[in-house]
Amino acid sequence: MKKRLFCLLILMFAMARNCSFADKICPTCETIFEDNIKFCPNDGTKLNEISKKDIVPFELKSLPEGAMVSMNGEQIYKSSIDLRVGRTYKLEINAEGYKKTIFIISPQESGKIILEPCLFPLSPEEMRHAKIDAIADVQYGDMIEVKEGVYSVGSNRGNLDEKPVRRYNTNGFWIDRTEVTCAQYKKFLEDVEKYGHKWCHPNESKNKDHVPYHTYAWALKYSWVNGQPPHGMDDYPVVLVDWFDAYAYANWAGKRLPTENEWEISARGVDASEYPWGNAFGLDKCNVGEGPMPVGSFPKGATPSGILDLAGNVSEWTATAYDPKPGNAYNFGGKYGLPIVKGGSWDDNAKGCRSSARDSKRSPYHRSTTVGFRCVSDHAPNLLKPGK
Image (cartoon, rainbow, N blue to C red; front, side):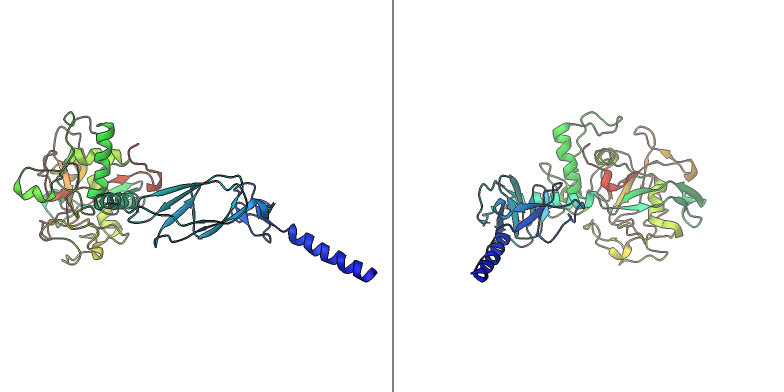
């Protein structure tokens, strides 16, 4: 009798242990963990027990490859997770080629939830806009830091207006890895249409049209129609923009146009090389050809720090006004003088693509298929917000 009672007690104890088995939850981030974990891996908080009856298993099925899923703003990487009864969850699914889909989930009782979402494909035009947005978002923050220090600018072997070699001291800054693309510029135009010309230079003409275009036949291929970039040129450098367009975009982006010296030290580095990649010209290192090409098409022409397209492709507006004596150059104010253009373009030769060369024959209202721009910032790119 005693033996049977002892066995019954053991069985009841085992059943009680099994019924009281519980997962753990972090009281701070409310993430659910397995029972054997005692402290939250995210914030170190001691975990509290939570009964199995308060947890609902949730499973996602049949998602497109590469889909990104977030729950209450936090990205999740597993198809199966645990949810809590009584809580509300916002599930967001982003997949290439499909419209963003949002579900609101509020588990009210135990029992597994299986979701097999039906995603709606994007139309060709919607896919194009999504691609433009994706390109712009990536390129906007793609900047390279130019370190604080003393650099050499100018050349004693170049044109008369490049002499003499002189020293330039900088506190450091960030510069766009590539020229500003059509995709990036489109985002700027959208905000100008919504909010007006609050980013524009005070000396530009009132209600200026910032849409890249030109009436000449040679420019039609690169002119924008209905505020849209030419088809297939989303990742090409934006052209047919004058100095005021470039200034306004840079201001909208929370950045600015580089001075001539900033542009030149970005291209020449601490070695003061003739070209961004070294001292010998190479057709495999820059776009000198029939027209603009997608940014970054010549990775061999990058600077040692990784800045691309500082020679060829399109030449670039700067914030500096020309003076025959480079030491006397000054900031262009939008009224008097001619802003300097640097870098050479697809229509230049080896001499024009030298980093110390100075193009000083462009009116600030000049629009060309050979001229674009890039921006610099005094702050790290993660601190910048376009349109602010």
